[in-house]
Length: 530
Image (cartoon, rainbow, N blue to C red; front, side):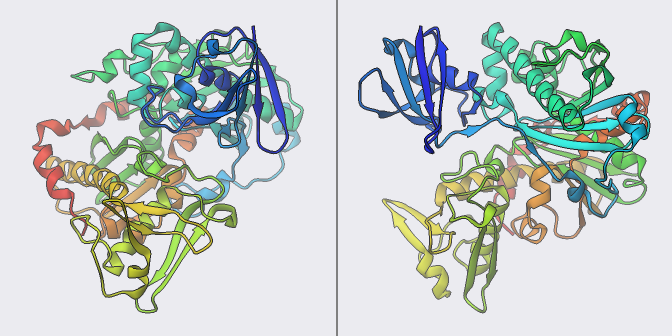
């Protein structure tokens, strides 16, 4: 047996005894640390680096996913100060909704009727995060919303990495299922504890996520989702009892568990429930309108003349911080946006919690692209200029070896946008543009009237910047509609949207295969910034 000590950099130490099998990363995962495995633990991305010492040896920086615990005789010490915890964090989802087609729930204290009645749980099972709403089934009101990182992230940032891991190892697939259900159970326990409620009161659970997340949660084989022709053999999921899942410390034996139907291998139940919510509120009654959910996979749904067309574009993880040299999720110190004025030679970066910049998240990345284009530091082809007319922009440009880069942070720190970062973002934007264009051609529409942006990225991105770089069409009116997956799951939970109508709507959606519509040529044309 080996004793592993996790030191957090602030004097706190967490100790666990492990059997010596597996890697240091495996042990840290068991302790609840969110290891940023962009590569799925193959030792390629280098983001799981930490200082590790074995027994009495001096600490040295290693890839924890590639470092076996068996190297130690009795003790391993790990500096986890750079690794995030998987602790849940409460979110102000009510504020996210604001105005628009979704409406808003007021975050007021539960009534006596709500505290005594039956409860439901709606879950947005995302690739990166899991968000869970506690709902009164008596009044259909959301009482509380909490979220946490998806612990499956330690097996890969995107769905393809997780499919690859789960396909070759049944044990890994089983562990991923357990991790997601236990994470949901932890969030539900936090809800119940906040109001001192019994787990027996939870009678309904609705889960919505992308197809891979729903397959893993349900224990389905995911291999067909990751190899050509990329099919989802089963589009619906059997209703189950809560006793069939591991909810960590809870036993939700009175709960019925339903998983939202999916539409294809890469257009899942999260998109279907979100589309259903918008459709039921008249968002697609007239014109040609888009629902966009930008993440690792950029899902696009076009509604026109009573018909729906959907596809998924391989946007990549750039807007979630992946493949960006100093990229991250929206965490303290991340650049979340920029303020700039070319005429005044003004540039200022805004960071989360107003800390010195240490990284850039997706919304900050989009602003950085728009600003460098406006300043003339970046040309439409995506190349950095050697010099431009702006003194401010010239002062921020430099070379690192043979690579040009641009300083996007303020003077108190150094966060750079490199030529490789621009390329990664350019590919993501081009994939979304190509997907939109192909759907428009299939539907035979000339333009888009409205764009509904969903998800966490949609909440934070500057829509003017998104239009400037081509991520959303500049001619359409854009709206942010909140976490459409979560709120769509709430609608299905309380019966505002009937389960049968979800199935009916899914049959109305035509899934468009981009590869059969001259995608390569369209994608290449879309690489240029406007």
